[in-house]
Image (tube, rainbow, N blue to C red; front, side, top):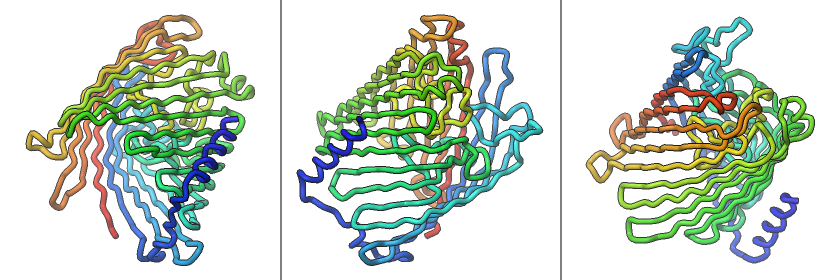
Length: 428
């Protein structure tokens, strides 16, 4: 039903306006519009758990190369996208690796993490007017299928994606993917995904208002719908109030309910965030709520299907209260108070700081009700502004997570530290 609504909305928009785009007419050629970029990433993550489980940490150096060609000239343009990934393990051997939330290097049968890993992928693309069809290995970033690029190496998916931008402000997406490449393992089908269909779009109604609707169907696992509305209220020259609503509805397939041991098949989760920006400061107040009868809460991403992971990408959680904890348990309600500071006005351009305090309650597990959790999040990020190291970024992040005994079946207390150094290089 939702996919039919999306189609009707898109047709209505197409019939209501004659403002058509034609990106293919502006094509300069396969070689002329090509680019090659290399990202050098050094990443470290440490989780100090506050129960009996062993602490986990991984450290690695990665090189992520991406090539994107232009399109050949003519009515239908043809191009190629490709990537090559390599990671070297610097630490995190037997006993230290294997944390589901870190996942730099997958454990082998011996129990040891690989010393290194490498993989590559490519896709061919065709463009007519401002509509592009891409087939092959890709890194989709959609609310219902969003690849994870916040660890050492990114995930990727193999399949077909159509992206249409024929009308100014309107983007439509439709795709089908049949393989998932885990970020910590080699091979194109290391994620256990059978297939996922995605459909949806976003529209910029005005300079202040944007909305999106998407749906997905993960074969033998679940069906998911997503809605977003974002509105910016300009207050003064350097002041604004942004309201951002995000919501998911998930329905698990009966076969997956039996396989995963879930106690229900339905989840609804939404968040509403208000961000007041004034000069270099930003203040955030957000509320997030999960309802439904599934003890998995909001299920997304990952590879271990018996742990409630479904294969739709590790970043498929466009919600306000997602840090170390996602605050997505069954029946959970959470509030966030956040603060951000840009140090440009204080003579340090490129330096930013973000803080968040999130508290969740009303958590339901198989053995208890009324559980709680709370997280304190801090992050400093610095981006070099000029010189030989221009655009190099250093990100220092920490989280302190405390989970009540009633919620121990859902989550675990601990302290987390992340250190990421990214150096992007534009070869051409």
